[in-house]
Image (tube, rainbow, N blue to C red):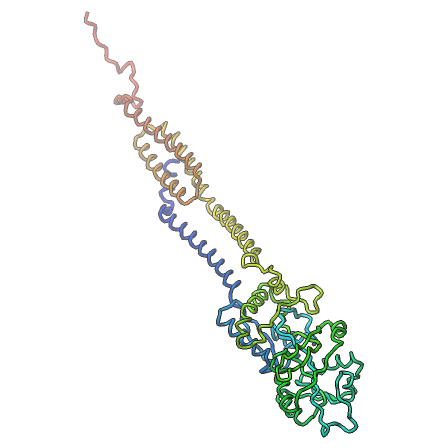
Length: 483
């Protein structure tokens, strides 16, 4: 009964997947895993290298700074660079700094001698501007009553009218710094501010005794100021700031500078001799929270397009790298410093930690998946052990069997067990060692069945009436003796 029950249970079991179906399923799983891994790598690369658009605040409108930044932004877009710029034109340099501090911009163009947000770090020095003090030719009909002294030094500006070119208060503060260095109380002078279009009219009507212009040498503001004075008043007198070194010592945001002789041309040359003065920088600054790789890429792009922008805006050729010294008045952003110092990292170097974690995560997931697959196949391994035990039981039973029909039935059941075992091996449910043990048991079973068949075929036929087949004394016929 036990043999029949086991055989019926085996036949009623659901048919396992064929080896071909199992292989196809395994290949689909492997393919899906490979595609998922490739998708993950591609996704990481895309998000790491996709273009980043940074908002940059720059002003005032129509200034040289705005034009240079707009030209850069167009080039970055046209060349499909990894970092793009979106200019935000502001009313003044101070407004640009405020936009950065308020989080409305990622970058800004700021003046080095003004208050710079604490979150700002230098990316590049866009340009340097010089302070230029000009005295128009003296005319008797334009002199104030009792004013008979010509202005030849800064100390003589006390009590005079000084025209500051540009509406920003930054240049008024610059004038205060210069006057105080020479002992002139700023409250003792009259400050008049003129926009660049108003300069010609102011000079024509002698509205000021001296003028302060602050801008890059060769820039629009300084060149137009000199041209207006030559046209409306005559050759100006350039006042030298001989205390430039002391000012730079007291105010680190300023540097000593020189206006070369004849830089503005003319006959005679303007200025006729080299003029000592002070300068300050206009910086491109970034929020300190911007990633080093993004700022490093931006710095590289700026210096790659510098000469191309200079073809339309010559001042762009003077863009300089930031000061990377630790004691710099305006610290450089680590990303910009890495580019300047030749320590900029490649994609693999920048993201090696992330790549390593992805690989470790994939390995951990693979191990977890293997354990989970093994866990799911535990029932299959248990069933195989049970079938192998059944095969061993049939081996013992075959050696005692007296029925050929029973041997045939056991061989059919063994064939089913073999089929199930091979399918389980194809699916990975059992190991090769288990399959070898099964093969040994199956071989022994077939040998036992063959031996039993031979024994059953060669045993004496039973005598009718004697179920055991053994002869008895009464069954033996006596043969009479010949004698």
